[in-house]
Image 1: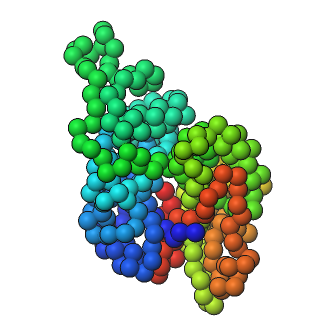
Image 2 (image 1 turned 90 degrees about the horizontal axis):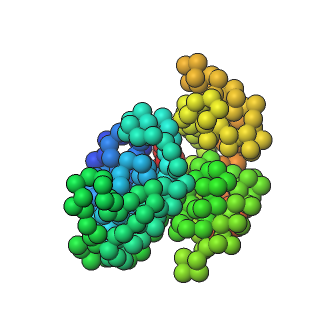
Image 3 (image 1 turned 120 degrees about the vertical axis):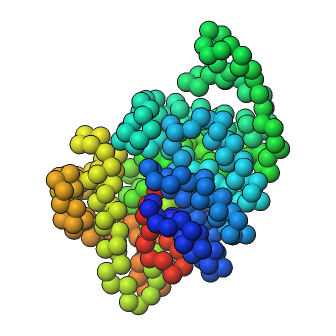
Length: 336
């Protein structure tokens, strides 16, 4: 198991980077940098590369809609070069509110786009000449644009020809694709005791199609982490972010996080959280998050409890479980 943290969406990035440098000294293994509609993640990741020497630096996540596949590949290769081979490219489809509202791009074919982005990125890092015919067409075909586009390959020689790609996914088809193609999986609100019932079939189906050279899928799962005799109330720190995602990250009838709680067995609670949040009652929505869910998705308590009573349950295709929202001396941070 490795220890990781996710930076906050809207905090001072310079202060956050200084804190991460200190946490690296304390044993932090991975830092994840989110991107929604605040500062872009790659700029902050570059600063982290300069201020750290050992920990891995991942995006959590870069939406596949906001950049071309080639630019995503360039960005990951550049960060990998600046960090000495410590980059992780975290990808995801985000959601219609951000993609259409902020980027002005139609939220269509998310699985196909993600699949093609993964394929193109790996070809870029191998310095292949890019010719691709799919959702993304490289170069543009005759009759489109100026007609002057030509197949190209990356000018630089990457530090690695395989930057790890982790995919944030929750739906069955997306999780199946993740288990088939990605190096790692970034689930959210991961309940180790119920994960197999929700995603087990999808993980098994994707793993059956997985190329042998990929190795096992790494599952980056976890929640708040705090170990000690006096940790009363720390689980409650997760309430606002869970309410935000379940209540506000999507519309009624199209909210991936709301649907996940329903699959966990909290359908009525998910409806109540969403109704309260959309009505503007955010504190009440946070209070409505089930206490037993908070316990299931966190590692908070005395050492003996965390070690024996709250350990992650392995799921198909799992190599390791990483607590992605925890760090030394830090009990809470915003989820990606």
